Amino acid sequence: MRDDLALYLRLIGADVRSQMQYKLSFLALALGSFASLFLQFFVILIFFQRFPHMAGWSIGEVAFLYGLASVSFGLAEMVSGGFDRFSQLVVRGDFDRVLTRPADPFVQLFSQEFQLRRLGRIGQGATAMLLGQGMAGVTWTLPKLLYLPVVAASGAVVFVALFILGATLCFWTVQTSEVTNIFTDGGTEMVSYPMEIYQEWLRRFFIFVVPLGFVTYFPALYFLDRPDGLGMPEFFRFLPPAVAMLFLAVARAVWSFGVRHYQSTGS
Amino acid sequence: MEPQMNTGSSPSVFICGSFSFIRGWCLPIVEVADLRKTFYLARHHRGFFGAFRNLATRSYREVRAVDGISFQVERGEMVGYVGPNGAGKSTTIKMLTGILVPTSGRVEVAGLIPSRQRRELARRIGVVFGQRTQLWWDLPLIESLELLRHIYRVPEKRHRANLATFAELLGLEAFLDTPVRQLSLGQRMRGDLAAALLHDPEILYLDEPTIGLDVVAKQRIREFLIRINREAQTTVLLTTHDMSDIAHLCQRMLIIDHGRLLYDGGVAAIRERFGTTRTLVVDLEEDEEFAGVPSAEMVREDGPRKWLRFQREAISAAELVAQVAARYRIRDLTIEEPEIEEIVRRIYLEGIGGDQPSAV
Image (cartoon, rainbow over all chains, first blue to last red; front, side):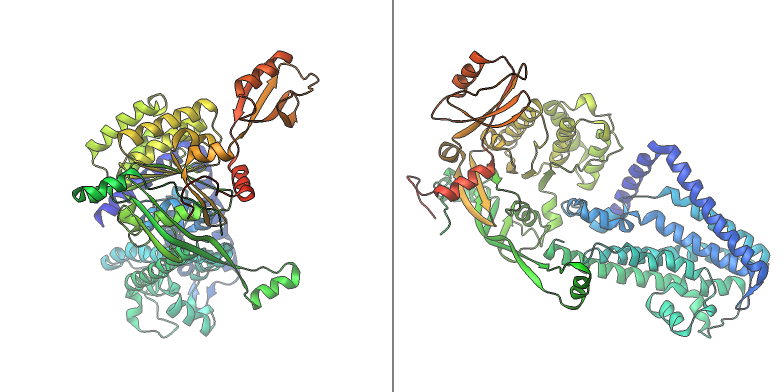
């Protein structure tokens, strides 16, 4: 485990050095994504000019939710490049190379790429959170401050697990990116708004099947001291770390099953 | 039914029988018995309605990529594994490395079962895919080699010693600090060979190691392979399209087609019997009228470049060159060995049989 972590750090270090060979392109990409996402954020602000509340949530509260979603998703994107572009790896035969090396394929895939440029999305998310909490007048306590990074990381883990599940689909069919995008890009979009606005079946799905509700909604209730419009138990607000770990374990198990399938079909 | 033969057992089998205490060392490093791999490919219906049929009914086509292959490779051997495209070469290699699980049959490499002990085996094998590099594209070569040291957990001292050896044998010094993307194909292949060997593998799989290289670069790679085979006793299994690779490197070759072994035996015997036609490629000084030469047949022509096919027993290459040179001014020339495809075609046509021993 410790060796795996050391290897991971070494390999992403190498990847970052590779990216630094193209400094200009890196800067352009990071700034570009920051700018475009910020525009998106302003669209929401303009929207709130007309409708100052959304399912009882104020504009500041939604901005906080939106920012938290962006930070978690940005963190996940930063580390999941190898899984996000997994279909290319399979098509090019690079996954065969991974299998001929003694290191854990899982570690090798995480080490494929460290997408520094995603700092753009993370920065944008953090800005939105900062603005949002100011507008909503959040009262910060020490437990809240300590819990915030845990929540952001847990949300990232949920998204990472989604990237892994998406990559696993590549073992059966090559055209998977659209399906995966529904859950990753679509998922971020979805958790940027309060769960109350969705239909009952959709809420259930995103709480008990694909646990995106734990990425922003439940923890945000805690930070914002809001009542739960869905009537779920209070302890749900503190479940994100456990849910994230469980979902990651499921993703890893499904992934291993996929690898075995690949080894028997080679496609 | 299929023509197949085996030119006797290798000498080490004999030695091992007599000295049982060295059996462990003498056991074949690769043992393959009745190996099969069957793929089931979904049959696709074409057109608009076909797309719906694909969803509704799943019919499969059975493809036997490897269809009952058996062979052994002794430690320290250098064996050519050849066959036309789609013959089942890379499927075999994938089963030998543990990437693919066999449908049936037995594989053992260095005493391990590849598909079950893949990661353990990975430390003991080296793999070079000629068309795909394992080096980090944007980093200097030396950094890739350093990263591989950590992936394979090679002790630093061992790594430094190996690096020094390979740098010298392959002449890497000049471009160790150059980013891989700026290397020539030949330089990159040399880097890839070093990368595959730094962890002292017992067996090296090479897939088309000289593809796209010029004659000088090819020669350099071949000399290196001969050296590590001789000095480090590294077993080499080589797939290639280039018959001259085999001729330079291997004593023994396996020919595979349609997933079956057509031939397992000496390279010399096969070249003697089926490799009798060669092709002289000449570049003439000017694009002048070319009437041909009596003892060779012109099979292709591209401006001043002519391809002349000739029989080994009818005329020597030197005589043919002299004949051409007597009539035309030659700027450059090469002699091409017969292609693997041509040899396989002739084996089908003529059968192996003949005066060769022990048809299997």
